Image 1: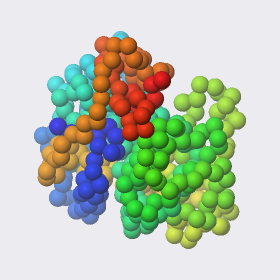
Image 2: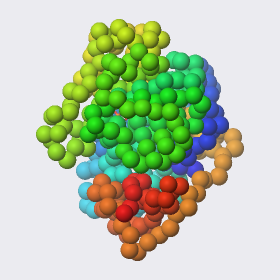
Image 3: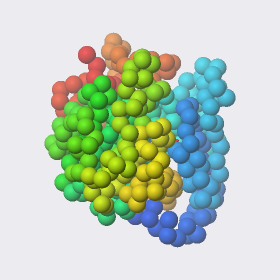
Image 4: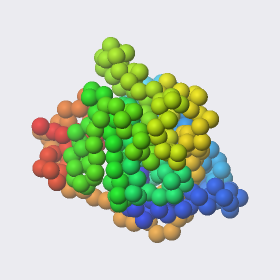
Length: 358
Ligand code: CP
């Protein structure tokens, strides 16, 4: 049984097949309208969402299936102290597949180890958001015609922006990708993404604080929101919140075929006047997310041909070692197995949130 916790859980060939299926679904929706007629998707959202939850629900309904779940942790038994693992075991009795969003890093992975049905990570804290990456890959493919030989600028909150972490991982497997990381120093990409992805895969990347300087070279500009809810210091958020605002005049120096993306929601980092520019792709990106989630559901429920083996990184359990990330699921989950993985750079990392353990 497969789950999707990290975008690297799928090979490039599998991602290509998911993209191909999503394109087919968008062209011939009637062919897929009853494939999941006896299946139930559970959406367990412990954090707010518009696009991810509703596109998952629309995806399952458009496949002929049914949906149950909650969109407010306060209305679930988590409010009474139930663990993520027990929640996943229970929902496995009622549904065929789970999409889970949780504020703590690694929570969907905990769920996938306890559940008896596939679990999809619909966003875990500031860590990963692999299904957003599925939407992003389809958008890049449709708008530029390729997933290789691209200069991709990632702009805004690269520290807490989980969509960026997953997208960099996905792009690491394609040829000719140049990454430009555009952020204030305080919101730079986390060390584990640099070590485990950018450096390990020898990706071509550079860092800058200046959007205007980077813009002319870009094929794709991926704007992100400054993630207010992840800041422990509200004053720091106030200082950084308006770091980047994309306006029409700034686009004067950009390529005519630039693809402007944003996972949304937007606060003010893209002026609404940009929405009518033909280069603005972020609402198409939201629609692409639904087609990719339809294809993903088909894959995980075994309706898309051969399913590969689970990736099994070298891991070990420890009674003494503890993850020191205060946002990790291991801080709150009861009876959790404290487990770690040995990485190629010699570091030891928590298997749930991937933070280095000293
Ligand atoms: N892009 C995205 O994850 O949006 P939501 O938070 O609305 O689901």
